[in-house]
Amino acid sequence: MKKPDGRGRDILQGLVAAGKPSRPAEGLLPQVRPAGAVKAMSLGLDRLSAEAAQAKALREELASRETTQELDPALFSPSIVSDRIPSRSDSRFQELKAAIAENGQQIPILARPHPTEVGRYQIAAGHRRWRVAQELELGLKAIIRKLSDQEMVILQGQENGPREDLTFVERARFAMQMESRGFDRDTLSAALSVDKPEVSRLLTVAQALGEDLIVAIGPAPKIGRPRWLQLVKGLEQTRARDELRELVSSSAFEAADTDERFTLALRAVGMVKPTAKRRPVSSDRVAWVEKKGGHIRVVSDNASFASFLQRRLPTLLEEFRSSPEAKSNGPSKGAMY
Image (cartoon, rainbow, N blue to C red; front, side):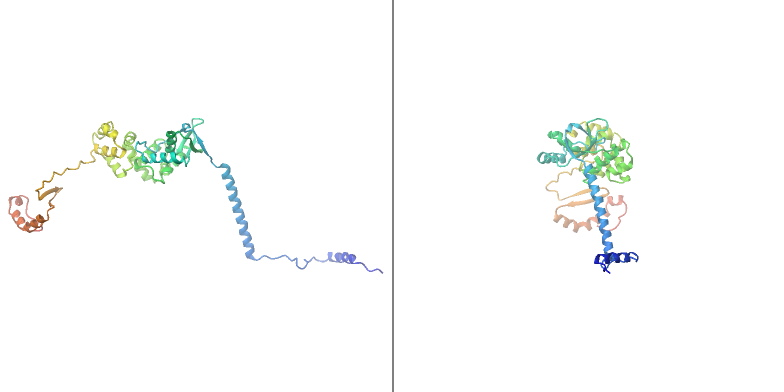
């Protein structure tokens, strides 16, 4: 009988093995991963997911990124509310103009498509850069964005807020203009970055002064809240507004800068008292008496006289007590001097 060859034995073993439960061959057993490796793999997958999400967000941002355009300044109109008060003595504007003339416009303005005029734009932020471009006859770099009225005034106010660029009265006027356009107190607070009580204080000042007087005086960068409140109080006096109307039409007011105009207005409503002029001192005067309120004092810049008076003061006090003047003013209150 012929013995089966090697290939036949392999087939036979395979048939026998088919009837038995299969067992993985040695060296091919499934490996159980340690817990640390599983955690590392999970973290790696999380990181890949986060990076994929970031990549998607970046693609979306790139797809919708706003581009800077250079446009004719004549195509732009100012915001629906004005935050700055025009002034001939605006040194910051002159500095900005000089910088743009030398280095060009580095920061684009932000505007929206004009809500009623096709092909034109309305500025939300960058009014002074727009004015510079007009004066220097340059193209205006701008980013055009769709904005609601509310979004526009909030953005406009917050552009200047962090730099504290608006004066007190400009902030008060800005609040008054926003309220007159129908914006609520929440919007005013967001635009000015202040709480509602502060919004109320700003509105009180602006409404008491009125638009015409605020614009006539100007931004007054050196004048803070306390002095504006003084002017508001002065307006309560009879004929105060008549006096201010006469002042505003005067040549002195016209020639003054914005801070000087405020001082003139404060004086016109009687809130600045003229300084008392001291009479000239003669060369032979040794001492003099000053009266202030209910107090009287003897003043001298002569040291020898001061020593003399101190020695004679007890005698003078006794003479005074026995004088008619002392008796008419009631009894003495003591021997202090």
